[in-house]
Image 1 (cartoon, rainbow, N blue to C red):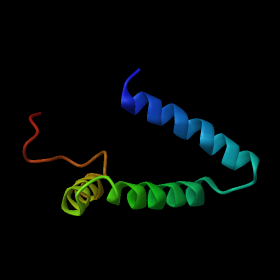
Image 2: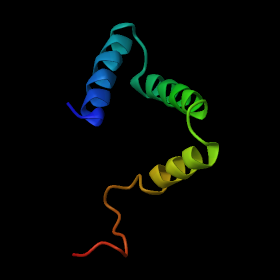
Image 3: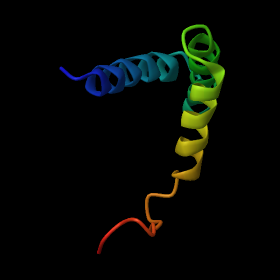
Image 4: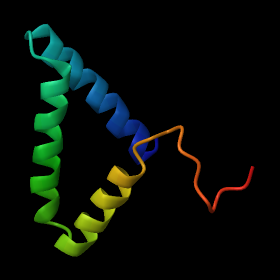
Length: 71
């Protein structure tokens, strides 16, 4: 199992638990993101973490074309 597959499956399980407890998925995801960033600061250089978060934020639009991509 890959690390990403493990993370996806864990997230699916925990979101099901949150929904079962009446929690909003959007709010649960927001809380999880905050906790992941906070925990990541303890094990990664802040500049590295900030660069990754900026990259992810800049690439949120799945339909966006990028200059470096070939048709």
